[in-house]
Image 1: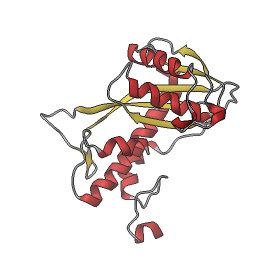
Image 2: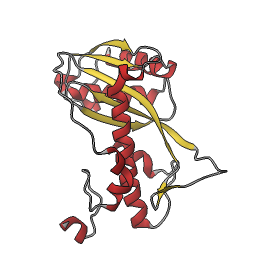
Image 3: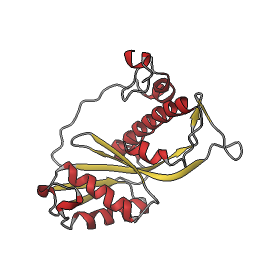
Length: 212
């Protein structure tokens, strides 16, 4: 409440007094906790998502007709199952994109694992990105790239495919997508409230908002 009183009303965690939190994530916060199953191996559960048109005043903004359209670049979302780490990046395109391959590989290096398993569904774009990330991880990088020396060696990456037509088999990725979508809505709603304008899915600030 002190943050609200000084004008900083957008918070990383859900707060019922934060109007942006309520508009962005109120429906998805009440969940029963499940017992955690310890994992031995690092596992990168991942998927693509898109953000539809902006939220303004708690309602979706309809653009170009009566249907709310998905716009803007795709967003790659991942969850590392062993640590629970979430990450998301706006990428130029799905599939074998150079920026996406380097960015995801760099994130994996910072996790500090010697081996990691890639888990996704069998979408061709995800499989193409997996192959590119694996190529990047198999190569040693220079310390000048911003990675500590001990993380610059090649990293082994295996893979596991979710069963076709069984969404529950990659539930970690689906849950990560929901969490990222909710947090994006919260932050964008707060930004729109401050600047009193709609921030669409193609706005340049969205790429930085998703990442940070």
